[in-house]
Length: 378
Image 1: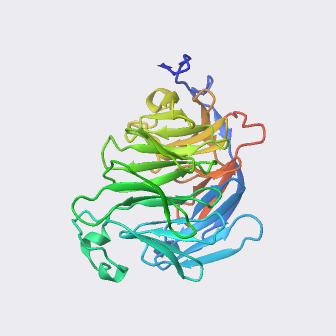
Image 2: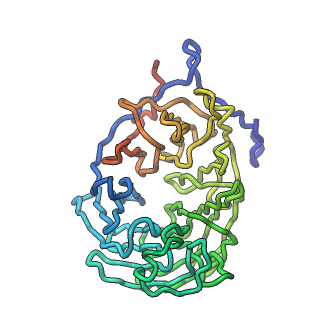
Image 3: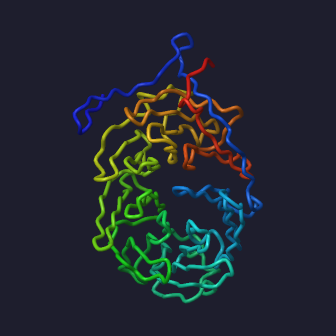
């Protein structure tokens, strides 16, 4: 039992079928299957990136980033990559007209023609002390430490007018990590703040309101933090949460669902001020499967304001996905797919979530029935 800040006592629990003695089953409806854009042998798995009213299929290869509009015309755009995919991460604008490659030494904005719109150089993400402000990728392309460097990340606001980026601020021994807010039109830095982190990787969690953004920084330790940022055009404020990993934001933007680096519990937070409202411990709520400890996945979806799709067992080869009531943060039952689903559930917007095919050649888009899902006998 957990007492939330609003005074209610929340009991972790799971809906069970008394006759079968196991979790109730909620059928998932296959909305569509979307083929990937590149050969998975030389590319990352396809991803679905979404903002209110906008969805893009995105796949990163070593030489290019390919983006397909999943709304409207289905137009496809290809961005030449300035360096291979192992040297950082990438962000794409909602309009698919600009890609920002977050590399080892720079943020580089590229348009579909391959032209560089702007570049912001920063400190090196390599674990080795790098005192050089490298001007080109060719200078360190064959270097061992650069090839195994840590990485930051970047993300666009839903209106495409703001870019958030996690970087190391300068070359040398006294390097510090910063969270930047930039104008994607020209790369001008509008605001910046030290993150007080020593990250090996990071990722952003977008919010429907362009003024908010989440940043999770993996430090390889149990105290890896998550930061919740707010920028009103003048003041950049940050709420810091130790030992937390942001998973998804509700469609209305009112709530955030998170877990911890140990994957012990789900946490429901109010987005406005970061207050923890409820938590759901995996060991108390999820039926056991085998001898391993039950752990929440590092990814989840928030398809509607009252439903969270969370996974367990993604690293055991037998993932299980669960329907969690977001109003009470109680586990209603297990998601029943018409065929085996691989990996974790991921956000797709508009009442849906997606999974990636096991061979990484396609992604499957899912939804609950219109009535929100009725438990069925297994």
